[in-house]
Amino acid sequence: MSDSPAETGGSNGSADGQNDGPWYRDGLSFRCTGCGNCCTGGPGFVWVDDAEIAAIAEYLDKPVGEIRLMYCRPVRNRVSLNEYANGDCIFFDPQQRNCTIYPVRPIQCRTWPFWRSNIATEADWQSVARDCPGAGVGDFFPLEEIEVRAAEREM
Ligand code: SF4
Ligand code: SF4
Image (cartoon, rainbow, N blue to C red; front, side, top):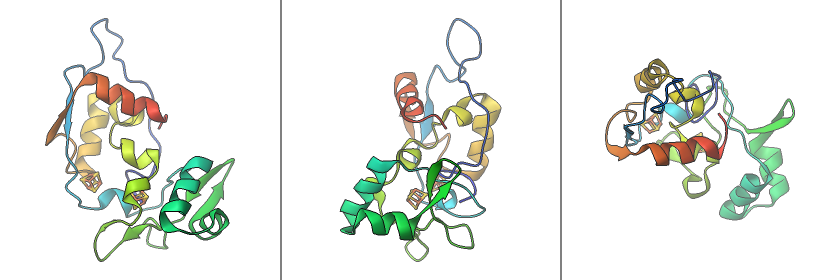
């Protein structure tokens, strides 16, 4: 999980310090191509809270305790989804190249690529686009929608 939706770090803040709004005030484009880059690759973290774990358990029709034990790991004071040795997310299907819990995927995954750390500067966004072919193309997202997504969870 080298890039998104797995968190690997980055800067914070979205405004450019001017009165007329952040650099992305005219909106951004994004449409997932389904390449799977964001769910695979180098090590990373997909943070989940109790509600997200419960939603995954219900979706998979498994006990919450089993989801915690088999699919999650404690990291410092938080909980992340597990990943395979190759860095693929535990819920990534390498044959179909898709997410096996897509309807209940964590907020971190649902709000990608509009994380604060990804839109802090135009250079950050361009860096994201190098690994995520959907960033910068496809559907138009106005400023208001970008801000809603970015605020869902500080990433
Ligand atoms: S296009 Fe971007 S969001 Fe979609 S799977 Fe690829 S890296 Fe992930
Ligand atoms: S939960 Fe799904 S969308 Fe999120 S990193 Fe894992 S496979 Fe990808």
